[in-house]
Image (cartoon, rainbow, N blue to C red):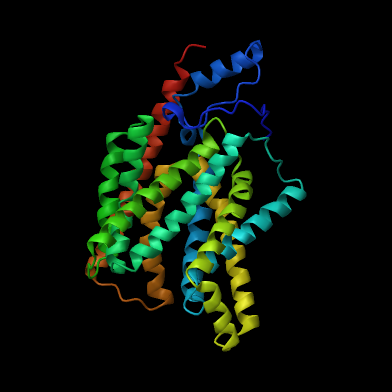
Length: 362
């Protein structure tokens, strides 16, 4: 997608809960006016409800598969490579190189963005880094079961942000489906709940930032700026990689990695091969994640996070011989039920939204 933009003045961002306002190139152009009126007439049809179900479920399935594979891969890698910031640097760097290669092969073209849009992208990359930092800090202050349970609240905060900022509401069935999704996922991750006051606050803040990151990602690609997912990735990845590398130096991970290599604690060839494969898988997951977010919506992405937690435990039974008691087994079943109800609610919402759109006078 190629966007035309004049350098000055730059448009306001996120004004009035409408995302990125369109850049107005020709106020006196009748065709442009007609296009704006048509866009307004379609504003009651949320983007995810305009996507064919087959396309949406295909991307959701791809996202689930790659996400589960990377979760297991990361567990194996971090068992030897105990440098999470360097791993994030690797993921974002390979994503930047991969999208750069796609750009030069002609898979997409870069849009022309103004200063305001580029600053917004930089702010998002900072949000991405802060989200990781909060996760790392909170995990050091709370138990893993408590952290995982609190992360299950992400769909609730997503709805609250959407409602507060965009005035968006959902059907009663959608709200009802979140109860088994959250309760079931929390049962699946049940364990010893330990946390400090600071750890509790950081964990909650991390959940809010995670929900905000998912929503902002969606608005970059579905708002009036409407960046294609691959272009969004190529613009965000280099900045996120630089920030992750700075954090790696600040936390001593770079020195720790050098020392580990000097002490032959890791095989250089085996480590390089393993990390390269991990980074490539992360690249494909990033493309899948951004496309899925654009096509399925931010709330669906957070719901998928809860469902993925249960599927990870399920796979752990077969791969890592994880023992699952009755509580965790029931939690997985309840989460699956919630996912089914949520899918039904989304299909009903899509039919309702499309019917309402067709009734608009042309």
